Length: 465
Ligand SMILES: *Cc1c(COP(=O)(O)O)cnc(C)c1O
Image 1 (cartoon, protein in one colour):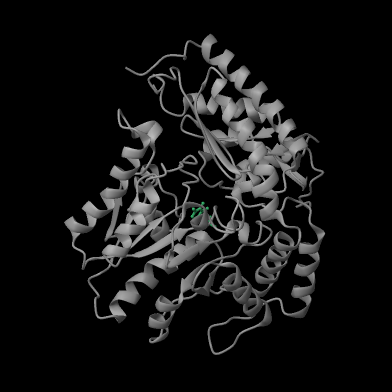
Image 2 (image 1 turned 180 degrees about the vertical axis):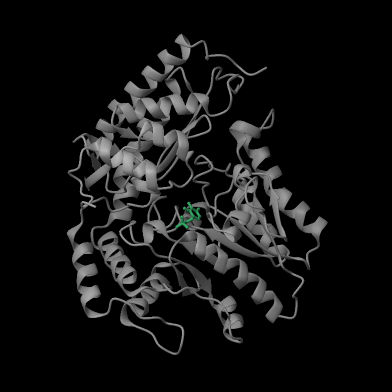
């Protein structure tokens, strides 16, 4: 067989892809017929496809390429590390410099006494670690029945059996026999979709108090931990009302429940602080990290653990670990990524330059006839599409139909913007400049206008009754 290169005709690549490559979160049958877009190169905030089109990537890959594409420093560090020590494990009384240096750097950046890192190859693995960490913690403290983890509907915590059980995605729970036992889901703080006639403030409090109700119902001595994303990402960039997080913190403190912040998207600058927990004002015992940790240049994730939990876990042999926990090449790449984030003051760029400019333009999208609410925290943002702003109506069509039309228009206009149901979301590279933001909005407006016209033409601008 000939070598598969970027220079093969697109149709041939697509045919081979359809024949042999099973895509995640895809209907591979229909994708195969349509043909997947082949991405060949990337630089800065732009991707290039096999037809030579330049595409503005407003999703930073999958929420991860925070420093942008094409940074040679990371490639050089990876090559150097591969030559020096491509692999060694950290299981059996051994360690290596990249894992040591990265763990120490993360401990320095993380707030409070989050001083210990357990490495994984991504966010799903890290959340599986967290399930076993919190249950082992309480078992070691003589409370083995304190093993229920409370999470939220429409949360995303990964795709492995454990992490998808923590997640609250109905479509995932419908396949493959999950969730595992002793995971309990409460409702999400999505005011636009579920707030009814209450104010956002009342609704935020009510949804936080569902945690307290669940603890009282299940028993304080049965609940080990609560896990949540500071801002729900894959669920549609859902930003909780201001009243929500202080109440969650109060409840976790009162009932002695470990708080796990899933920072896989929010961590490393996305919200305008190093961690989303700082932005929403919570003090977690454990943080899940991945994605922006290496800006996606290498697969790595982990759990940042506070002193108290690390000390208790350290009192026993924790029978858990991955072949690639702290992989030296991935760790070296992540360390270089953190150096760039810090030295180039990218978190400050988000906070002082990119996010304020993006916010001004993003919030103005509510003037578009299709847009109901526009939400933004740092460099992650969403709009709810609606046929009737005043009543916050949903569309009469199958949920996601309108979002999908809009997403396809963006794609055709060389803009990567995702849809979650009938919400449109972005999570661009953090290095986005004001000029690139302007260019992005040219494409956003064109796509929304075209989608609006198509929706009217197809008679879909109708409210669900
Ligand atoms: C992507 C994601 C995960 C899963 O990370 P993987 O590296 O895909 O396993 C977990 N939590 C959140 C919040 C995520 O966005």
